[in-house]
Length: 212
Image (cartoon, rainbow, N blue to C red; front, side, top):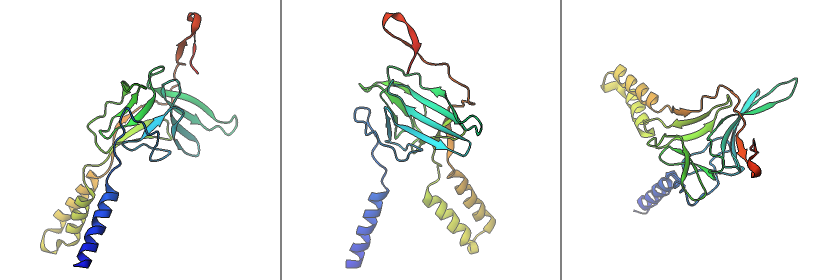
């Protein structure tokens, strides 16, 4: 009996550890990310924070700027002239955005300080999604595969224990479960490294200057 109670308590503890973190709400930003290179649901980028992906020759940085704009910066390494960095995509939320939230419904949303939506990726309904910059210059939102870990385990076990059934059928089922578990790309900026025109700001006197 004591052993059964101990095993049950251990299972409950493991289940608690496996529970996802609660999703962030627009009115209570936590300004934290699961990683420096990607955001899981409930993670938030606040002003001055970034996600970055790098390789030997190039890098991509997604930054929530103090001016309210969520901007994708691409850096190209040049061994002769040094690195060059330019903006390749933005949410066009200057003067509106306060933070970018990766929601539990799969939507990446830029919120204003008062909680209203300035911009959204339009990927809601894809639970289990995450956003990550690619070193190639794009920002990607990935959706987790539809097959659960237990489904893959069951299919693999069926292939292993196929003495009482058709081995080929069991093997195909295992492959199908593995394919369904592969993450799929739901949304991408498709920048192709094109430089953005500088965002314009209107200042006192009606002058129009590049925003900083």
